[in-house]
Length: 509
Image (cartoon, rainbow, N blue to C red):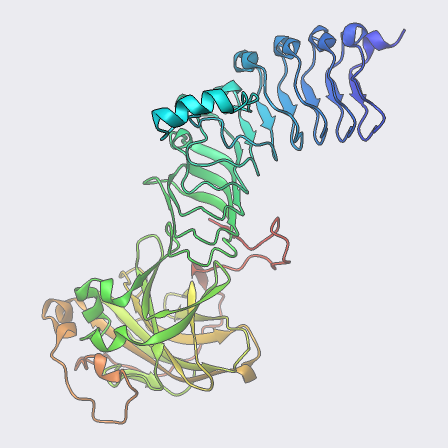
């Protein structure tokens, strides 16, 4: 007597159910949950009589082979979950007319051949022989059956999706909010998703063939991890992310939108190289270093690289083996801190140099702090990458900055220091140096001066740097007591990585 008023029916984990109930008397039913009914084989055709159904959850009904045709008559159905229904061989063709469907989860189903041509690249003999000898192929799951224009939440993880698995006319709604394409062998972002303007949550995990993600829409939460071939991630011009899970185990990632871009030093702009004080890159090409990327948690053996950071590309870092600050750095200190006064109003750029050593096997994580004590402003720079010294050798970190007058003005007293987040006994700063270039110096081409011999013992690539004569005033000062206005640049640590891919490092913008 009460069945006519029943709205929620949950028979999850009932392994004795072979066929669903008769829905003729369940006219008021809104939620049907049959999750993990491992012996369920059939959904009764009378399901079309439960016209008020809003949600159907058939997750992990592993023996279910098809959905009834009457299923497509449900006019208010919003959520359909068929993830784990590994024996589901086809979807009703009329599903594409179900414009009320907004949430579709089909993780673990095989859509891999849904858009492939059966006789592609076959000769006429193979085609004729195939018609005679090969049994008729059973129907396959097809994405063409989905009402893609209405779906706002789409999860197709582990569905054997390739680049050609999406039908030509498959176009998702501009209002798509959640997209999960994890565990699929796609190489690029499928064309059907490139027209999106904004996605709230986008997940791409364990895509072992993924190579590039270009022209992404605006994303509020973005997660891509364990994609070993991924090299590049970019957004459409003017768009960005709100929160990102760091691309853990994407060890080949060289460019990540506005955060970093890694370029071999021989491919960098020659004028920029000169501004860094490097006159000749040839001796540097054959030198190999160990570079650790904090975004990907990956260490690579590579030639000397330039690491560009910040969305304006205003920060450049270069790591190379070296045991001393080049002599053309006009302000030097044997302690991890120094101070100076900006003597001109039009400061064009600034170079810093840090020589450091880390005990073998120890973690590495330190930052460079610019503290304008006069303006009470502070910039904390966490580099995207660190050069790892070999054995007991020293590593030199050269960093190139472009500062505007709002950062450092005439007469400003500035302190630059290195802060180490780990045990100081495992990390040593041998020297630190600073060199400033003002507008008139740049116009005169001072930074492009001719190569000069350095009159002191030097390491194997110190001769690559060009000495410069200009020297601003410098003296050592003390830190301001008042709390400064802080700007974070580069890598930002906002949580502890637990090893669970669902909770890696996160960056907020």
